[in-house]
Image (tube, rainbow over all chains, first blue to last red; front, side, top):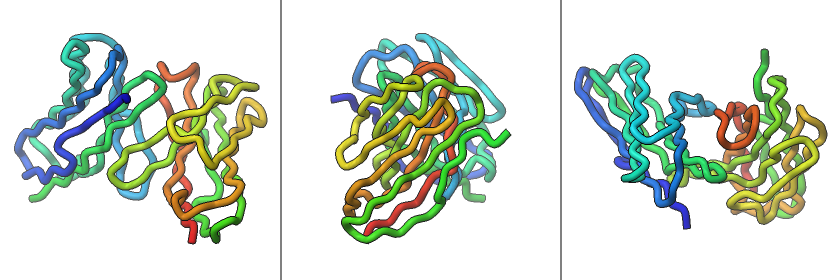
Length: 107
Length: 113
């Protein structure tokens, strides 16, 4: 059974500090997506990671992929309130989503 | 450019009632998808259509049927709704299959009493 697990499931971040969200998956995949979902809203694509060692950065978010370890990380640098949302990773076999990480930035 | 649109936005059904969720995309994408989102479970794929004229089961297809009406439209039907189908339903599309980025509609919040 394919599993896509994220941790932590909930994260309260202090403004200005750095944090990392982890996404582990249980089967071989060379493509991984990160999505953001604001409360009551739809999903917005953030990154697609296409190969082992891939790193993508936009603003305060940086995502990386280690296909050998079956692990992707989403690193948040100097958290700000605008980053409060739920973040999902998704692995392409069909398309299996992680459980999501609900992220809240507190002043 | 509307992207992916879904109707209705909200719906309340009684157990045993039927309904169809509508989805349309204007991006000329070949592939379309239906997901359900439940608390603590991420999104789960119900059905997908890799291209016009084809549909396939996803992870949780039981209790649902789909129709790829044309390249733009992909509907999801609940023939006899059950409380376990209370969820938020998202439609998505991508240019060619799962390896392309998926674009999501705004979602339909369905409650089955």
